[in-house]
Every structure is written in C-alpha cells, then in structure tokens.
Length: 127
Image 1 (tube, one colour):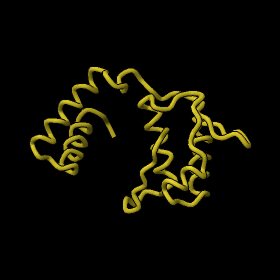
Image 2 (cartoon, rainbow, N blue to C red):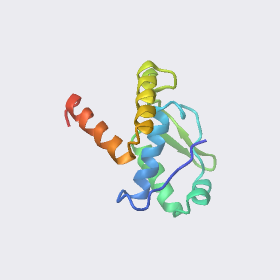
Image 3 (cartoon, one colour):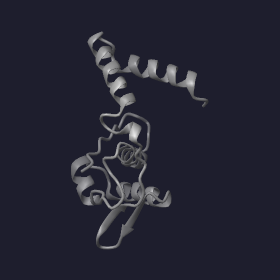
C-alpha cells in the first residue's frame, strides 16, 4: 500500500504531490496494473487533506490513462511505468545506493545531494 507524504511548504499543489507519488510508486514497481489505490477516505485519514483534493489527483491520473475509477469499487492502476533498471537489485540502482550511502557517511545534507544530482543530470540530459 502506498503511503502519501504531503509537504505543505513545498509550493506544489497537494493534488499534484499525490499524483506524483502514485507515479513514483508505479515507476518503482510498487504499484502495477490491477492494484487498487487507497480510497479517498483512507488518504484523508492518513494525510488530513480535503477529499476533493484526493479525487482531483485521481482524476488527473485517470486523464493520463494511468488509473481507472470504478464506481462503488475504487480506483485501479491500469498501466505500468516500472522498468527493470528502477527495481530493487538493478545494477544502476545498486550503484546509486552505494553512492548515496557514501554521501551520508561524508556528512552531505539532502540539499547538497540534490544539487549534485541536478548538476550531473543536467550535464547528461537536455532540459
């Protein structure tokens, strides 16, 4: 089951945070076709967001063809975004995990790690 974490200070709309976290879980293979998303009520209870916000996030995902709402039953994942490279145990992921462990050991804070990642990523991928 996916556990949503809402950052109320991020400047990103809550519904977009929920949608992004669903997509991230799909990319990591934690959610796949046929899996049911938490009900709006469950999300509201765990995050204290407005039910309409959850429904808006789910509608956004449905509009993208990633999930399907079934009246009276729930919302289900319809597509897979997972790749073998993103799954636990994949070689590149293992290398990144080792690097991240070294970063923590060297005392790097999250903001510095994010800055390094963003800088290196932009050197390899066009915006």
